[in-house]
Image (cartoon, rainbow, N blue to C red; front, top):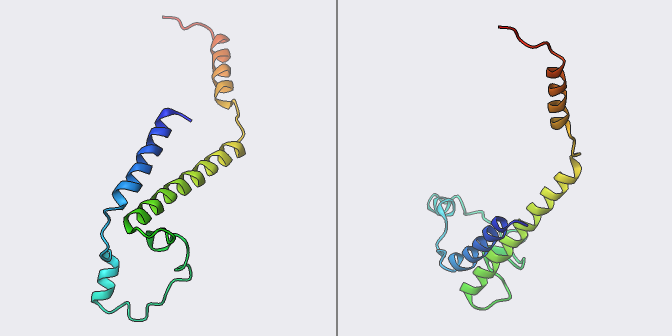
Length: 119
C-alpha cells in the first residue's frame, strides 16, 4: 500500500472517531420534514433496528460519544475493506494486456518502412 492510501485511511479513521462524537442528536433534514408534515405517523421500526451498529452507535458501549465514534471507525474499516476487495477483484478479472505497447511498437515499425519525406 502506498503512503498516500495509508495516510488517507488514517485521516478517515481519526475523523470518524473524533468528529462523529460531536454529531447532532437532532433529526436530519429529511426526518424533520417528515415529522413536521406528519409523514412519519405510520413509521415502524426497521428490521435491523437491533443490529450492533444500528442508529450509528455501538450497542455494547455505554458512553454515547465513544459508541458513536466506534461505529464510525467500524464503518470506515468496513467501507475500506469492501472497496479494497472490489478493486483487487477487478484488477484480477481484467487481463493485463500489452495492447498499448504492441500498438506503439507496430507504429514504430510501420514508420521505419516508410520512405523519407522529401522537401
